[in-house]
Length: 392
Image (cartoon, rainbow, N blue to C red; front, side):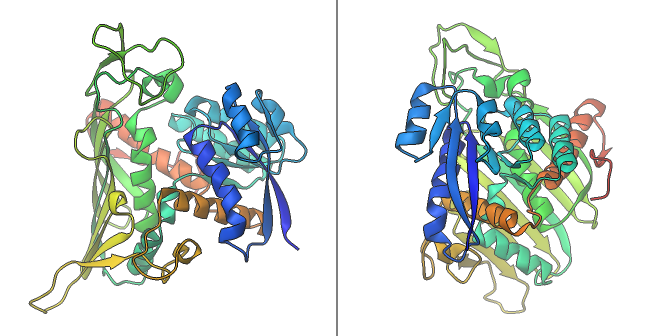
């Protein structure tokens, strides 16, 4: 008999909707699961979203006050998909109520907030999860297998980048994402966190870093009410100051001796969603790009004069891919990764097992971020110190 798991979703924006759809899809995608998910309650401050939660997504009810959703006795697990600065109080309340909690990244917007969330979950003894969803791409999982099996030899260098255009329009509105007190840090919290999590997943812990930052568009039009991050102002609109970084870059050294380079931007024109990595070893190399989610480039060192990169296409021979589509080179998409991570999280909860990637791994990511922030001021190499004060 499958274990019923009641779910609350706090915030029905883009990611709240993606997770809600994923929960609805899980029974048809993963028939061998050991649980049955139930959408019990959704919390959102906007009335039209609450209506959609019930009418379109099938939640049993919707409420305005997220505290009410967390306290619902029918809820076993809470998904935190609200704006960044609401994450920690929501997580702490869920942990205090004994609920498992899955939070979209970043947990808060500053490293110390991630540490607070981790400590709350540890003290309560609840299962935690974080939405570093690109780790669940089947070909990223396969890349980890290739690296761990020694196919690339000794890893010598890692190159990670996440370049996006979502903030490239200088008339883009000054929403909460650009404010330090509402979003926390900028691209280092928002998208560099994905690059660092991938690097740690594939290669291992980072020992020291040095880097720089820049705010490429320092002023943006002030919105006159509720506004989307993709909304646009006019040249004559009053403008306000962007308080966090648009761009960051980082050099690093991994604990295993490999070197690394990272860069991230939300204002660069051209790359639309280039979340990429390249891993170089003594016997071969790999590269992957989110824009080509279903392709992995593999170079194997050989004396063959016709050697070169080979394209490995996604297919049901790789982890999770077959749940969505059979055969080879039949593509899957972004929300399939969300469904996969939600499935694995709920399966871990049903079986009483630890889920990775959880809040512990999120602390590993922000420990690197804090060292990078430190280097902005010191303008020199900074060691990565475990912000949780324990062993990794």
